[in-house]
Image (tube, rainbow over all chains, first blue to last red):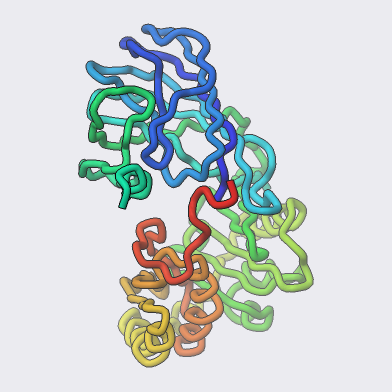
Amino acid sequence: MPRLDMLQLKIKMGERGLGRNPRYAINGLELDFDEIKGGSGPHETLELTGRPKKFPRSMTLIGPDEGCWDIEEIVATYQVTTGVYNEGGAGPYTLRLGAVTLDAETKLNLWYERPPQLLEV
Amino acid sequence: MPTWFAKQVAPTNENSFSAAPELAETPLANSSAPRSRRTIYAPILPSDAPMSALGGIRIRAQLLSHGKIVLMVDRPVLDGFSYWCASQAEAARWSPLASALFEGGGVESVQIHEANVTITLDGTVQEPDDSAARRFGQAIRKHLESGLPAMADAFLACVPSEEEIREGLQAVIDDKVNPSIAGHSGNITLTAVKGNTAYIKMGGGCQGCSSSSLTLRDGVEQAFRAAVPLLGALLDETDHAAGDNPYFTELPAGSGA
């Protein structure tokens, strides 16, 4: 089970932004991001950094308290430590997530383990 | 149990789509009341990596642990049936493609299932690397370009019927497999047989057990193959993440942090 040392999110906002600072949850425990740059208004870009140093079974981006939050795209970068020998690979890995809308009833899954390396042969 | 402790250890349902309330979602970052939220998933977009244009046939390889290489071809290699073999002599009898893959040496077994070819390397090879993957990819591409079938015609005539395979595997499960794993509160169910491909699910103590892949590979699969000749791929459909009583669990989250 990998330990998540650092999470970086680059969020491109859609039509409707978020009226407060975003939060995330690991294993159901809500956390604030350690660094927040940019804006969360419509079509702005928000850059978030968290350093949870936890072993996620689940990780989510919490939706707005009211209304809707349109996300155009998220680029998520994960820095993890895997096992004693870090056998999962020491470098960070990045995923691109597509458009989604969050509201007061939803949260967005953010936890993806390192995708398998595919080689063109 | 102290209230703070109950909140930390309460189960969550973040990996499910159900809308059941989450006891553990305690907002520490703000003072608003706990809110039950449903987890949704955004589409995963393709990376910006350029597509290869090697030949006309695209093959991607995935290097796995335990000496396995999965080669994914952009078209069916074997339709309707699957094939598994662990010797070059057997491959030479049934499958020109598998035989070609054994030729370079260092191969323990070959499995062909739909568009995937899975190579398990033998003990002479430490771990699969890029060069091995490229060698097998080239062999598959060369074979497909030759127009030869993956399997000899005699293979399909000799494959047992689905009913024969189902009966043979169920007898192994009832007489050998389940009695031997019952001590770990585990059980195995045969869920389907399609062509000569078998689908199983592991339950009880096997579901979520970190040793389940070893149980499957070194115990169940060997017993199945000994009982049912020309059994093809054996696929585990178990949702191991949903296991609620695994016999051999991984270290708890946060230990050693």
